[in-house]
Amino acid sequence: MTGLELKQLRQDLGDAIGRPLSAADMAKLCGLEPTTEGADTIRRWEVTGPSGPAGKLLAILAMASDRHPILDNFNIFDRWDVDEKERPARKADFREKMRNEIRERLA
Image 1 (cartoon, rainbow, N blue to C red):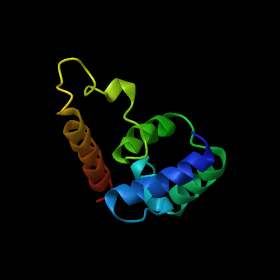
Image 2: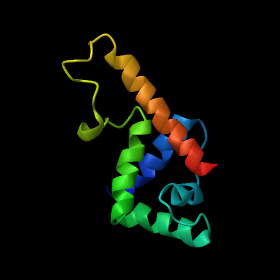
Image 3: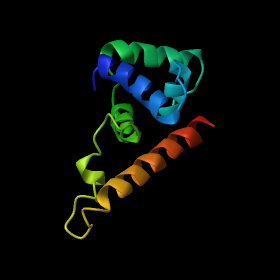
Image 4: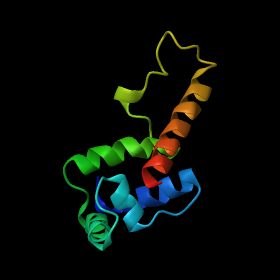
């Protein structure tokens, strides 16, 4: 994930949960302290891109937004045993669960 992609992700996740996310909010989502230091780390990452496990975590949380694909290792909806008519509803439920996860992490 690049810095520009992280900036866009912050916007996309804010849109998904219905409120803008600050750099401190993003720090909290990454497991950093939501202090000035954590927010500064996010701002640096918005230039250079996140490092280590934070990038992987953010890729997972990105699935809360309709603008990001559901990752293959999470996609249990496009299988032969799931009726094609049920797939959109199941995907929507999954995204809503991801949004709730983000809201819980920010609480």
